[in-house]
Image (tube, rainbow, N blue to C red; front, top):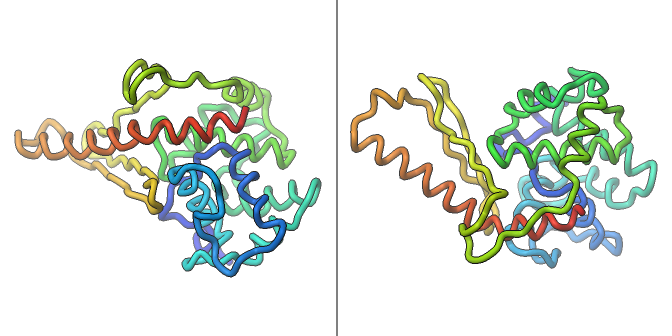
Length: 243
C-alpha cells in the first residue's frame, strides 16, 4: 500500500507526550472494544482528543474509529516486539519522509525541524511533534545522532507550570507567527477539546491587504491562538506525565 494511503495527511502529526500515547494502550490489555471512544481514558477532554487523533493519524483506527489489526498487535505486544511495532506502525508509516528517506544517525535538529514542516504543524505545536517523534524513535531503539540525542535530553526535563490565571505569567508558551512573507502559504492546526481538527492556512501578501481584510485575517489568527492558550493547561497535564 502506498504511503499516502496509510498516513492520514489531513491531521497534524501527533504532539502529545509519547508516554501518554503508550499509557493510552493500557486500558485495552483486558480487551479491545469494537469502537474506540474518548470515555476510555481518565485524562481531560483535550488530552483524550490528542490521543484519539494520534490513533487516527497512524491508522490504528479506521474512519469509524474501529480498531485496526495494527492496533490490536500494538496493544498485545510487549518489550522488544512493541519496540519493533512502534518503528513499523508509527515511525515508518507516520513519518516516511523523515525515517525512510534520511539517516537519523547523522541528522541535525535543524534538518528535522525542516522535514517536520511537511506534517501540518508549526510553532509550539511543531516543537511538541518533534519531541513525540524523538521519544518514539528512542523507545524503538532507532539510531540517533548525538545532536538529536542532546535535543531529547533538553526537552525531557520537568516543565514549569503556569502561575495565576490563564494567560498570566506564562513564559513557557511561545507562539510563532503563522503569517508568511510574500505569497507563500502557512498552515496552523489545532486539535479541538471535543475531538477533530481545525486548520487555518494563510497565503496572502500582507502589504496588499486593505483595512477590512487585515482585521479579518488577524482576527482569525488571534482566535486560533486564543483557543490554544485557553487550553494550554490541559496540554500541561499531559506534558507532566512524560517526566
